[in-house]
Image 1 (cartoon, rainbow, N blue to C red):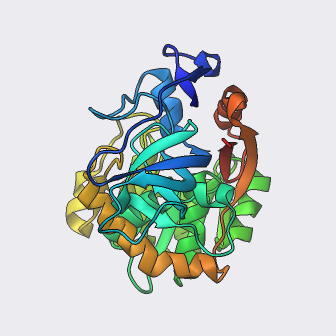
Image 2 (image 1 turned 180 degrees about the vertical axis):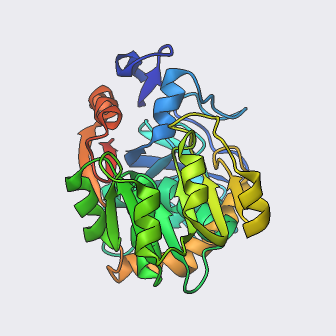
Length: 326
């Protein structure tokens, strides 16, 4: 099969088209003939040498795919050979065939293309797990999304807005801030020219937001603490701004604040399977009714993975960058 491998740690040019043997599904797994795969920040970190695959995972990049079930351990599943699915994988998505735990597979939502379906797993699993499970965004509560035009951002904005929450989002330009608003954010905040903490306090009548989805870390942390409501929660899922920040423990104690974080890739199949069930029950109907939608910025052929990674690193995109595999 054709695949994209990382020849060594480095810039996008270290990605190379290669030929590998098809992977073989084990117990509880299925083999998928991949039609499309998503590009995600963890793929970039893996390419740079700072995010190694978990033990036993493919060394090929790619954490989400959509395609056709070929074979596998299907006896206790709803799927059969020929079914179209999208799936969260631990690696190996940049290839013509990939193996996925059957419990991490979901049917392609009615009305969506395979490119659109492949854009769903990584962001929807991540957002649901961190915003709704871990940070417990509840009825009547508000959300601030840092990086509102990223793949994670467009998912979080749309999903929280569709479920009735007030949503605010930061972005790096006026154009991107307006894009956040078109996706459902009450206010897009251009962090290059505005103090997001001051904006949030003003927009919430000085109360602050209940939950912050943070992909930055670093010096954002003290400002995020300042614009949290009492009993507020910060869910950290990436550290684009650095791994160290100042935490005002006095505010944490007095105002009962929670700072938490997680990374999805090393979690167990059972953990991810539970998220898949929640997505099927609560989110797939929103996709099929068009209340929320995939946002695809650009799609590249598999052999142009280098160009796709260059676009990801430019941060000029709004939404997902995809690979068309077959």
